[in-house]
Length: 267
Ligand code: HPA
Image (cartoon, rainbow, N blue to C red; front, side, top):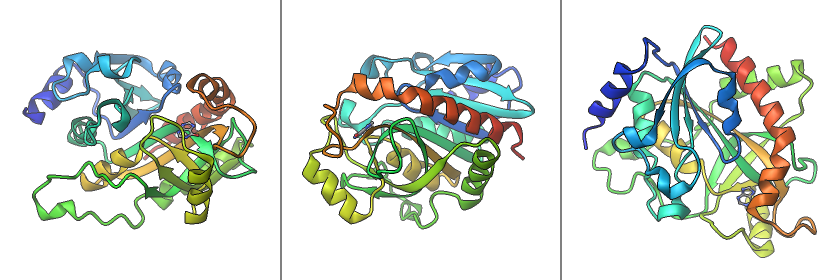
């Protein structure tokens, strides 16, 4: 497939919007798109190289819009490694955002908390990650730029801005290390104890492949996790997808405020 055709198709429908920032929304966090003024929305089914929406059973849409004067593109719906066993399923979407002109990418996800102080409903800025899966979306890349430097993968200036906004808005923004497990089963309590020993603060089944792809494409990255549950073995709750979605609400409200305030003053 020719990614330039996908980019041209989006541009021909974009009504003049030239996004500078891309956003990838995590499970249950799709309502963020409601804040866009008159977005242009395209289904992934129209976009060659984008994941097949049948796979993930929730909306797969690309939205172009503005928040204040900032032109953005939002991907609502991501393909996870556990859905297909394909580790680079988000390669074309991430490269498309870069090809559309995005210099920065903001990722959001739902995560389990390994920090007692970060209870369900709280938000954490990711400072670094641990790839616990052993796979990479850059497998089979041929050029030497596949050896991507992952130090400072999470941009500290963007993170500082999120902290400043959180302080102004009276939102407690935690920060910490995200560990990527491939899922789809939740982790065992023993795995979570191991993850804690390794230095993890939050656990999830997404984001890391997109961060690797975005750094490979030269984009600046920030990522925010909404804690939807305490990680396995840390509370008496039985983990389920439904539970994680229910707990996301408070975090989603704070996340929306952080994103909107960040984007409306983006320069
Ligand atoms: N583990 C992995 N992924 C998750 C979790 C979790 O506890 N909560 C939300 N996504």
